[in-house]
Each structure stands twice: as structure tokens, then as C-alpha cells.
Image 1 (cartoon, rainbow, N blue to C red):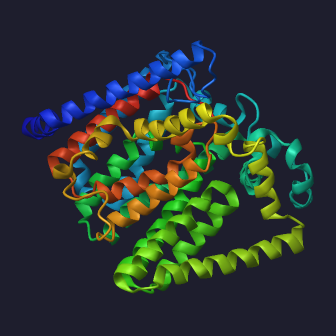
Image 2: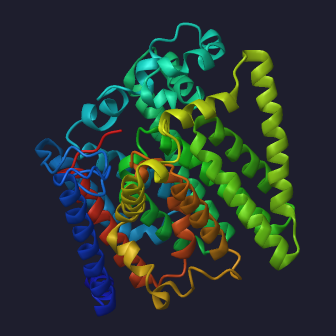
Image 3: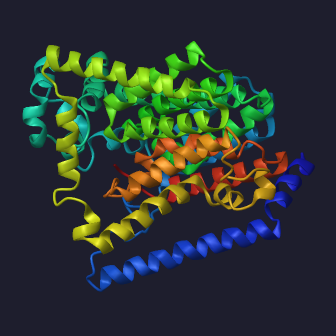
Length: 456
């Protein structure tokens, strides 16, 4: 037991990793200082006080959450020791427990699982509870979109209808609503494990990597009761499908997973345009390097089915998905492309968005990305078919940033779908390094949960 912990700690205290973490911390502090100096100078950089966390109550201590934090650490350290022997079901159950306990460290069931739905105004919940006839509400969506709460305005109507459905099933009890979201989001855990197995990662190793995924701050904090947790599950389903097609060719099951995940994700959020963009890049790489068209064929099938769904919704429910997208775009950028009319805001919020994703990955996992000797691969290796999938996801996301998406920050939550892609490039970490990175991520998560407040 002692040797186990000594190996993990020694691995992570290597001078190169320690030096990298120090540089990352220094960069974070420096960017935060620059942002706040701009705010004080009245330059309006569009960034938050607690850079780069855009939706944050500020530092606090959730005293009533301390017992849950203690239970989180107990379950976490037991899991670290035994995870290599866990089945997929056990990994999912432990992951579910860590998500629930991590969020309860916010202080209470109310704070952890209810407030995100109805707190602070502008939530989908406030529109969902007003629905009396969902069919008529859907028919009127395009006409009433600008009258809805701000989150509802910038999403397809099904983001509201999911909450309406769960509220109806649960007789308007928030416990059922929260439980439904937690269960749907937690399916990402099973899908990440399946992705790793599809990459021929041995089951014990897949369980260890999946535990890391569970305890990275972004997933642990935001997967519980946010729409983006559900979107992350659908995105990960699509990613599993892509990987099966890349590895096995014209795989029917893979195509079904890819098309299903992508279509459903696009019904919940317009940000899911990330998925076809990523698939297009992967498909082009498959054509150029392997002369295989499986991914592009699957993408074409998805686009055809998407057009069919669009026509059906337009004819049956009089709902125009394209018009809803354009209205959401106008709401997010009423003055057009931000770089032209607010260049400082554009640049600083782009930096903020990337920095928040990096921070919520955890400093440990972020640090090893800068060291090829630990990764045992190159992140920019176009010829590695799995690494190139990560690269396609990263490029698609960066292009969305450059286009001006995510103007209000909150990218660790909104871009929750990107975190499974990181598992692709962390899959070859040495055992001791993986344990150390997982421990670091888990500790950072419970510190952030216990001493911070987040809302959306």
C-alpha cells in the first residue's frame, strides 16, 4: 500500500512536471492580473473578475459540505487503489457516487442539484414550468423565441422540452428532474470506457482512465444537472461511433451510434455543430491517408437524415430549426462579428474560453500534455489515426472560438463535450503517472467544489 502511494507521488514530483505546473500557475495568475487591470482601467475586456471562471460566486467555504467532501475523498482513494479490478458497471457506479458526493460538497441537495435549475433567472426551467401544451408551445417557438428566457432563446426548443418531460414524469418534483439529468449525463462514463476498449486498451487500464475522466473538475462539477452533461453523453456516443468506423471500416453499429448521437445533440444545442465539423475533418483525413470513405459516408447519411427531420418538424409542428439557429446567433452577436466592433473583448474572451477549458481539465492532466515522453505520442501526429481524432476535435473547437462562439465564457460547461477527446491522448500514460494525474485531478476537483460556487 505504501509503495503504491510512493510510486504515484514520486511520478508526479518529477522536476519537469513540477516546473510545467508552476509555469501554468504563473500564466494563470498573470492573465488574471492583466484582465483585472483592464477592468479597473475601464477598458471593458469582457472577462470576469475571477479569470478565467466566468460564472463563479467567488471563494467561499461550504461548511455544511465538508462531510460530503470527506466521503468523496474516502470513496476516491479506495477507488484509486482498486479501480483496475473494476468492471464497467462498477466504474459507472463509483463514478456516479463521486459526481453526487462532489456536488454535495457545495453544501446541500438544494445547492448542488436544485439551484442550478431555477437559480439566478433566465433558466430553461422557468420556461418549462409555463408549458401547458407542449405541441402548441413547439409550434409557437419561432414566433415566441425572443420572449423566452435567455438560455431558451439561444437553444433549440428541445432543451426546454427535455426538462418539461422530466417534470411531467416526476409530477413536477425537482428530485426526478435532477435525477434524470444525473443519470443521462453519467452515461458518458460508460461510453468513455467503451471508447477505450474500442481502442484495444485493456479493461483494467480503461477503468483507470475512466476514473480520471470522472474526477476532472469540468465533468465532476458540470455533468450533474446541466443540459451540457446530457449533450456530452450524446457527443461521446457519436465519438464512439466515429472510432468504430475508423477502426473497423463501414461498421453499421458504429454508423448508428454516430448518426444517433449527432442528430440528438443537435436537437438540444446549436453548439453541436462541432460534431459534423469534427467528423468532416476526420473523414478528410481518412480519405487522404487511408483511402477510406466510411466517416464521410456516415456524415452524408446524417446530413440527409437531418434534412428529413428538419422537414418533418417544419411540416408537423411548424418549427423551423434553421430560423431558430439564426435567431440564436443574432441574440449572441447582435452587432455582428465581435472582432470588428469590439476587438479587445474578442481577443480577451477567446483567451478566457481556452483558459477555462484548460483550468477545468486540471493542472496535472494539462501539464502532461506538454511532455511527449509522458504521453508517449505527439498530439499533432496527423498519421496516428486516434490522435488525429483528438486533433480534429481541437481544431474544430478553435475554429468555433475564432468565429466568435462562446461570447459569455462558461466554456468548461458549454464545451463539456471536448473532455472525452483528451482521454484519447492520455491513453498511453505510464501507470504511476496516470495514478498521479488522477489523484491531482481528484484533489483539485474537491477543493474547487468545497471552496467555490458555480452557476449557469
